[in-house]
Length: 377
Ligand SMILES: Cc1cc2nc3c(=O)[nH]c(=O)nc-3n(C[C@H](O)[C@H](O)[C@H](O)COP(=O)(O)OP(=O)(O)OC[C@H]3O[C@@H](n4cnc5c(N)ncnc54)[C@H](O)[C@@H]3O)c2cc1C
Image 1 (tube, rainbow, N blue to C red):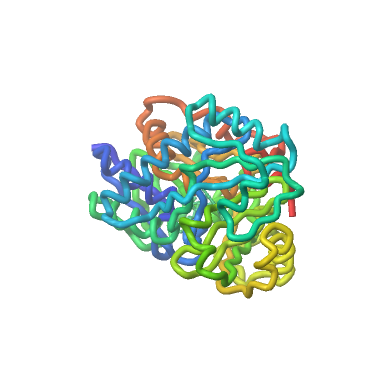
Image 2 (image 1 turned 60 degrees about the horizontal axis):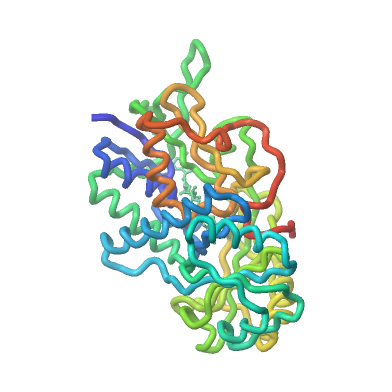
């Protein structure tokens, strides 16, 4: 039986552990805290699922496959994790990112609709779109109950035979050559496996030198809103040009309205988790412009997370030494893909195919196309 140690029980590590156990591997999943702990990027209350990725077909397809993956996971878990309320993209120009996205969605037979800005009133109780060129609607997009989905995935992995170890793992190097070994060190003891996958999110750059990755603090804001602003009546929304996104209320935590613009550098293990008041004002300014009746909505709930950003927002999946794999650099757009990404990575670990060159540890050229925002904060 092939063996693997996956380090990190965020949504990427937990989904991979579950997939490999299903495929017949002997799997150990090492997590320094608990699956769903609040410092994980995966512990956000909610995460969006969208297929639109500008001109990129690879991620568009993967997101579409992931939608099926979430449905299968829900069936297995017996609970609703993915709320398919749809998503409206606010396009500021006729021929920009949203136009390209619509072309790709149509080419891949993923349903979408181009609408007049005046149609915004059909989806939001109050909407101002006089600065917009058009709306792009993805009916099969929506919102994932992220923290819950992470806990459920890790629990299903355990049910499928994964050994979950609560410990901080360290990489191990060969004393002679200095290259990494397919092993982890836990409390001074070495554990070996055929493959080791370091799925450590924002902790990865502190474990491995020279990665094309920076970690930034990201504040998430939820505002108290009247009942009409709840899912599924009020869908998810993204203004790519303004780096603003959100969705209607889910589970009573309020309407999400945040920025995808990158925040200041951040240390995920010890950084204080208090939101920046300037970000609250920024979100309010956006709400006032787009949904005027929410201009005075009070903040109800906040969370601080972190992005593990690569310059081009392409992920990292690279073998640093035989059997030693780094999986990270989610760049703030990895949650939705997790079930499908796990299948892709499982094939790589099995030797069925090589990872796409785009995921390599090479120097990256800065680009924002894969992000939910077209401009920095
Ligand atoms: C504010 C915000 C909004 C986002 N919005 C979206 C969205 O709408 N849609 C979307 O698809 N994605 C979104 N994302 C991105 C998404 O949350 C991430 O892509 C995803 O959660 C990454 O999961 P992960 O498993 O790689 O990392 P994490 O969830 O951070 O998990 C890494 C885990 O590794 C563990 N670990 C690290 N080092 C060690 C060690 N040495 N030993 C043991 N354990 C270790 C950590 O404790 C942690 O639990 C957003 C992210 C943020 C911050």
